[in-house]
Length: 162
Image 1: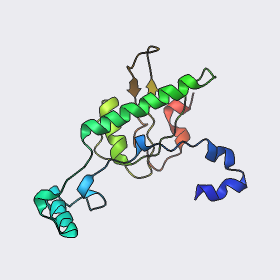
Image 2: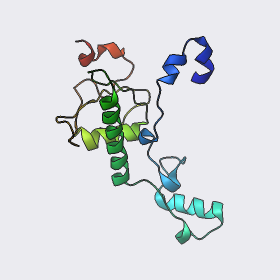
Image 3: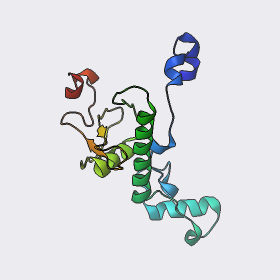
Image 4: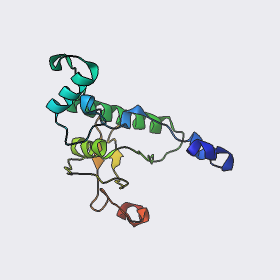
């Protein structure tokens, strides 16, 4: 949809967008695209019936928590690499559009915040910084009032006022 707007003056904006697999939604394996209420056992039965194979032969390739966390770490490394490559002395601002499951796990893994659910179309601001050059340590923080904000003007965020 955005691509159709290129001729309307949106070309520079579109060129600045970098789609990344690193922040895609979590892979749910055999439960992918099924209602949340479908259990793993039920999904296994459904897939076996669809493929005409025994339930024991159904392979679930759902992403593990460790794989999700590694993907998040790689995303942070990407951001750091992009900011290091910048000729400007600035703090990069990244708009990461992803699904609630990925964002919720990012908050748990890197911000020590356990959120039960992230609502659709909500906004969360995560401040990311690296305390030392060449160090892999990363500090992520979320301020009160800047997690899962919905139906509010983004300029009401405390960190954007200064």
